[in-house]
Length: 228
Image (tube, rainbow, N blue to C red; front, side, top):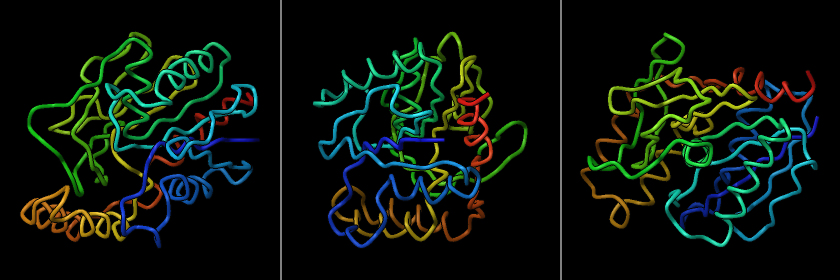
């Protein structure tokens, strides 16, 4: 089974010694999907999107960009997603991946007015409350017609979506370790984040209990639908 991880993130300066978004996703997902050969495609750094038929399934990473940004790769990505859906290719989206899937498939994602949410937050997923690592301000605000909400947080009503085709997406970052997120927050303090925002986020991570395999089995189950 061949899975492509589409990496839409540009690493923060100062994070060169840490894993990229694609590597974090691979490390999170591989134990739940050991039969998959995973290829990371660094779209944000200029690598071209593959042909839809090149892989059995796709994982879409987070990004510092929003669905409303006009990047060199955004229109091509939307066309790619529509073609992948028509071809029955399984899709798993994380953060920006969650948003661009919804926004492309008939829903809507946008920047919400109450600001950035960063740290460890409780999400109810399939009826069970679990903590998850988050960093975002954009959210899905309109559910696509062929999707069902199966997870949410008090501040995020559309936290997890399951599609009628092989599609699954989450607003949080199941691939993030606490160490990685804490380092990213520390590096961003004084530029992207205020000291007060960083202190609050770091405290939530230190107090949190986020499972290393959060929703990995569900993502793997979705991707395996390529061979069913």
